Length: 223
Image 1 (cartoon, rainbow, N blue to C red):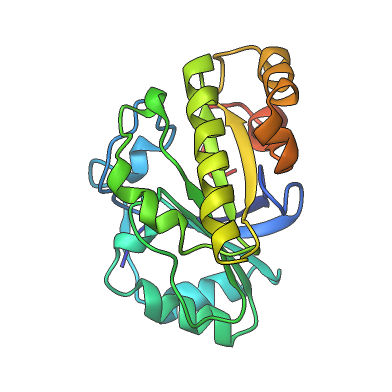
Image 2: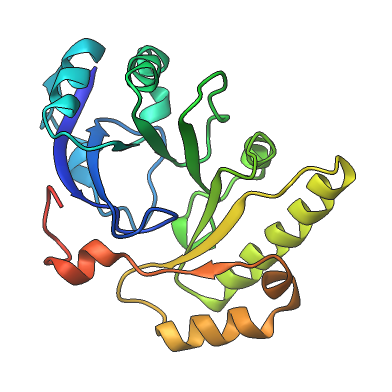
């Protein structure tokens, strides 16, 4: 597998914000978002080849229970399910940060997904990926990366649509997070917009910031 980096840090966003975790950043991605902050893991040759077994041993060396599999896009890798099984069987709790172009992996005890829905600011919005959101459950997260009021409007529409889709099957919704594109819309404006929107309030949409970009330099790697 092509590995960009493996490092210990804190979860910068989502349900485990602030908790220590080992990050396994796999190299390569199948889309190109306008705001990508990890292009070093998407293009070029800055990666190492590692087997799933090698990755497991490296993760074990940090002696912490949480693992985040990220990228690039981790779910495009041929051996990703083998890696997930090794980590899952070893008792790690795994968060898969995924761009939403692949469905949620199934059959694992300790795996959940943080799945993006690509908004207009990404330049990668594609309706065909909507079906992948339906594969999620209430352990999972849908993340909206937001930079404009148009993005917020689109996010609210998706929340309301999913409320109907999941409600018909009497399924519990995933959790929803709004994450600002660093350095764009003022946080206060985003929060006020969320508070004013009925569907976002009704479905407990959470606002988050990228904590690691506050603790460390926003351009720092390995954090």
